[in-house]
Amino acid sequence: MDALVLDGSRGAECRDALAALHRALAEAGYTTEVIPLRERTIAPCRGCFGCWVKTAGECVIDDEGRQVARAIARCDLLVYLTPVTFGGVSFELKKVLDRMIPNISPFFARVRGETHHQRRYRKTPRVIGLGILSQPDREAERVFKTLVERNGLNLRTPCTAAAVVTPESDLGATASALVKAVA
Amino acid sequence: MTAEKRALLLVGSPRGIGHSTSDRLGSIVLDALKSRDVDTEKLHVHAAMDSPTALESALAAIGAADTVILSLPLYVDSFPAPVIAFLERIVQQRIGAGRARVFVIIQCGFPEKEQNATALAIAERFAAEAGWSWLGGVGLGAAEWQHKDVALALAPLAEAIANGTAVPQPVLRRAMPAWLYRFGGNVMWRLAARKHHATRSLRARPYDS
Image 1 (cartoon, rainbow over the protein chains, first blue to last red):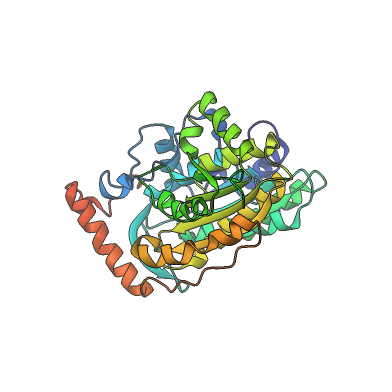
Image 2: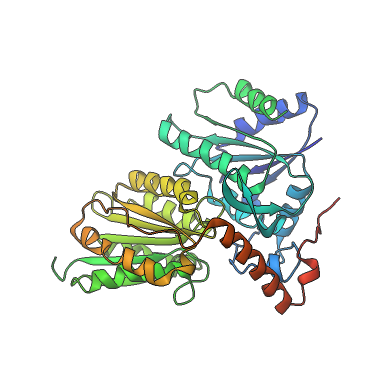
């Protein structure tokens, strides 16, 4: 099984959490690839929908965003690792999530009573969200967990799990619990 | 309200000013504020993030405004990425802290306006972290299909925004039944692909392993 960790940190703020994730994923039998997004050249989505109506499931922007989208389509488990930013994900991670829309179909479907897009691929990865906060913030944590769950619905993933950690958290236990939750 | 009051529309769509639904919706409110003797200005967030000079100029404009209207499309349950980076700069530099007020308009490409709830919560978290007064926000679904109704619903909100009081939720019926939106949307995607001779590849899987 292949896990893909999208590291949305700007510097070293997610380093310890990444190490804990690595251990938990290895213990669960995953082969893990980590993409430090701050080191990748990925332009923001243009909102042109060319990936749906022109270029058949591939973004019209020819940069490293395409490679990340390919890796996401092929992995079994997708992990968001990010500083919690206003309750959401960081800019570094969001620039990639915005560029993931080629991986879903433009066509609409009814899902859990709401309108969403159909799957493009037969298989979609399970999703884990691990958010980093410098201090406890219940509202930011609630928003972050809701965001990961909503992303799962839009990306049509089989299941999601999310947690927020602070410097006082037990990173190893949290990472293991997240990996088990999507097993 | 006096002429010194200044409102700034931040357009958070990559399509920018003059070409986006975000601009059109935000401009309804901005024009209504202008008619109440408020000085108004528009900025495109993505353009501001293009260069350090543009960013500095945009942040200065925000520093001079007492009311900010942030209008953006829903992208993966949140804001387009450059908007997050831009708002982070505002918080880092404490621009408008303790003084600015913000009202947010988010529209999604689904018929259910409720799908904007998470992004509106993120906007409210931004306001709290920036030290800005939260005037409220409105989430719209399928706004591109009900131009007149949306204009009639949004323009009256300018009174509360100008007065700096909590903005009431506009009364707006759903543009069309959700099933009709899905059916019409699916037809529209086929027609759009036909223009690019890509109808047969609409369901392509280029990344299948």
